Image (cartoon, rainbow, N blue to C red; front, side, top):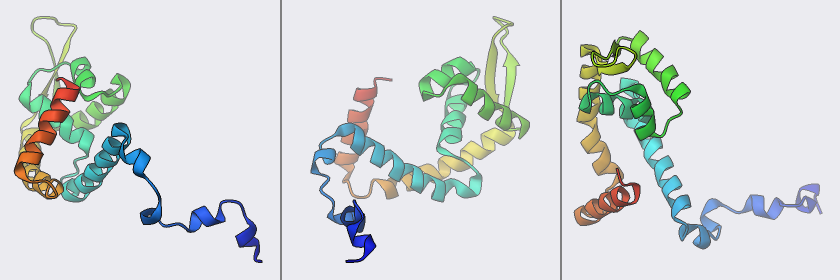
Length: 159
């Protein structure tokens, strides 16, 4: 016998992903949602790479576009980002000229986020790619299933 055959776990290492029994995990919503998220993120990086958008920056741009003047703390909360991590991203976006931080007129201590014209142009280009990307990623589902999936996810997350 070869040393490789004697090594513990060698048989398991030889099994391909397709031959593994994943039935228990396939009945685990969290696991399946995580795999779906990874699939969507991988596709996102391919489709949006030319624009330099990541899933996080895309979401940041969309929330700021749809909610001009949103405070960083609210943005962090809705996107489930730690505020220090968000601040790092915002610093990069501001130094690249995509967003601007303004002092609130009602509370001079508060900061409000707005898109610059450059940022608005970038998210407009990103938004143009969104529908074809979503259609591609959701192609295994018919239109009714796609609507149901979004309705169920929204109900679970209760925005």
